[in-house]
Image (cartoon, rainbow, N blue to C red; front, side):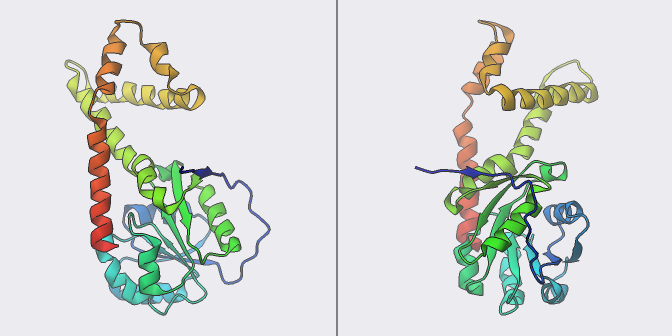
Length: 255
């Protein structure tokens, strides 16, 4: 049976970790830039070009990998032999700890799955490798918990939960857009405002009361019931299968 351990690290523990102050980011795309912007008050350096990677790694105490999986092989060359006394935090999807250990040795490693929603808050998945100290783990988790709700998951569960935390914002946004466009005779801007307001408050009710909101809104043979029943019969498994298939492709090719 699989278990997920959810814990919110609210308070900074009394840890003073020597030489854990400079945060270096390899990759400054959407996720890398978002994390840098959210880590306010920290010493941050970054690299968005291969030739600047070695210097960022050298100067950093915590190295964050935010590159695409297809660029990881080149980054490995910059990291090899240069991580002594450092913590590696990777935001690269689907590539498991074993791949990093194979290329880089027995390094302290934390895998995270951020989401674009972390711009506001959202959730971050985290998994600590076997060589991470309790002190480093607590420090990193405390930092992440300041910008998002932190969920610690086992590595074998990480891909599945990533579908919900990281992929779902785009899937939900696409559904909302197409739902609005399917309604004839409305102003799209006003329709978007109304739909987003409904979505925000539905999320709050879901968190408070769960799925009973469906039966509270839907009357027997009513209009809302038709919509809910349509969604219930939609081949949602096909979506999950497609996401899983893509994860496996990335894992097999780059992991």
